[in-house]
Image 1: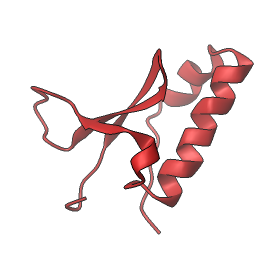
Image 2 (image 1 turned 90 degrees about the vertical axis):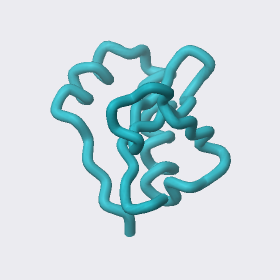
Image 3 (image 1 turned 30 degrees about the horizontal axis):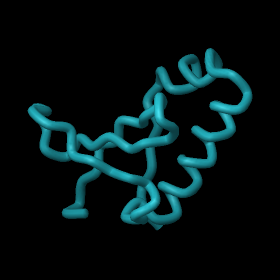
Amino acid sequence: MTEFAVANSFFDSAARLGAADKGRVFDFMVKFRANPDSPGISLERVARARDPNVWSARITQGLRAVVHKDGGR
């Protein structure tokens, strides 16, 4: 299984979301953890990021996750 870590600030940020968005965020986390290469996750490399392993993933039209992927995937 893929190693998966969450930033310390995640839970405080997630707590400020509405119930529907919280559910979508946790659904994304389950799907990402199960298969970080799934096309349904809609990963896009963050342009001009200092680290080439920083990606953005669409959760909803207005909500995105910032992901650090390494290991050549």
